[in-house]
Image 1: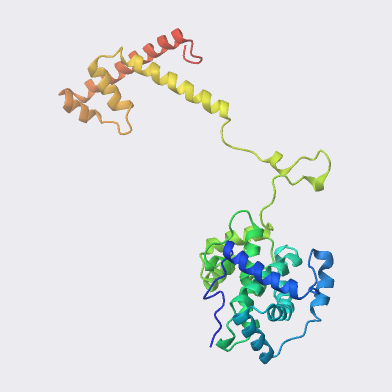
Image 2: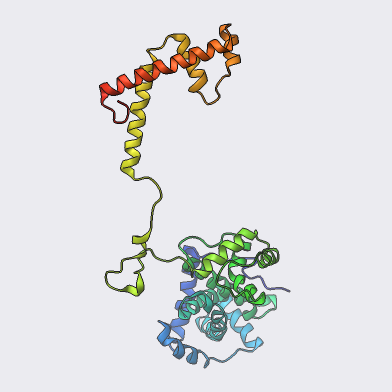
Length: 327
């Protein structure tokens, strides 16, 4: 019988889960004062040395302790179950060292998963706690890595998370060690094996080569005084705000001038000029000649004359309003 781990019941890291985990941890710390504190990388070696002192439980011992905790919430039982599996957490956490996060933090998150596993473990199902808790430990560590790796969410689907946590391994298998984009054949291979689009493989590889998100406030040239920050070197190709406002105002003035200048044309001239030059889909000379029952040449002449009248009217109005470039 296969254990029901996070594949079937994924851990919920909400308020309720936090309370449950804290409850188990309180039980463990109250009953086992010798559990070493893991406060940083400096205490890591001491922690790893201390947890080796806890004995490995036999299957019978583990079953009896699990039953005692499941039925009576026995604090001593919970303490022994957790402490005897701290080495398992450390071993799993070491496998995630390549993501640039402190090992002590990975172990701490793994311990959270272990305590979730202890709380939900069902000894009567016939498998060992280590087999069941392993899924909770990995899920807790992976969730922490995804939260910490980037301010932008790295993956939302199971396939994307699988890509994130398997890309390095697959690149090593393919001997793709270059610090640049993957070869197209390698991209296709990885995308096919992991069941994700090829573009997601390319994007994820680029982000992981950069080591996650970088701060725009990072000092240039190793933090030398006066070197400035990365954000000081960013450029914006968009127009300046004052230029955009000025262009909008000038466009509005030109539109008002055009409307006023159109009043100098008669109705037929306005219609022909509008249909020939001021619409997205201009009408042909043939179409307008049928409307006014004249030749195409006559329509062309009216159009040219109307345009000349419009230009003169625009220049006159511009001179009155002193618009630069028009007078």
